[in-house]
Image (cartoon, rainbow, N blue to C red; front, top):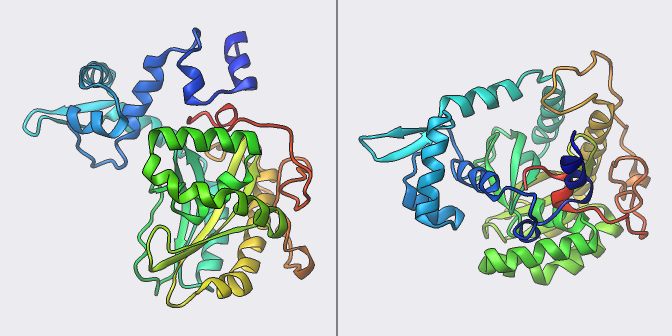
Length: 327
């Protein structure tokens, strides 16, 4: 890694900081913003739609889509006058999906819980103002919840997002909150009044709940844990029908199982050698902690991170963008 890349990796920045940094090439960031608009392999978008989604001038989008098409990251469809994800992007994502041993183990843990609770259980990672499902499991009798691997959910209106933002150091979380209020002000109003309470509840109990924010029919719970692979927080989360699981049942019945699940996944992450997509995972038994009623406040972390261990001593500041290359 060169000095410039190492410096960026160590210090990290929010998007608002990047605009004034001379050694950051904005066109690269904008190109990824364009690609991020294509949420599915079948998504078809024109320059105007892309411009509206990522907030860039249409002329800028036109130049970017032209370049990305020549690189094979996008394909132009003359009949529709729109673009879709190209073969190079598909090939890149396919290469990243090799070596699924760890993800299969995570999926099995999620499925175990999904068979006990009639909802959608997910393992998500942050991407700008969203969270993306890396893995998920769904009860056969779950109704009204439709998520899949690669699906995006908003940070501001979901339990997973509220758990993630509550786990960040206060200064980092405040900076992210300010960025949301600037770029997505209406959505940010769902999170701002709850942020302080979420932080306190997370420190006390190890999880965060959100009832009826994304949908009046869905209640959710999220448990953040530190990922040494991505150097950021990931979240184990579940969504359940509010008619079946009110807030009281979330605390008494769902929270203990999600905390046990997060501890098990935390052990898997700590036992993994390298990236979650890596094919270098050793074929060895990975420990899964047994349920412990006296340990409901624990969140697995890198080293012995005091915040996620349930104490009130804050961690050293970590920038969400410093540790998360997707930002």
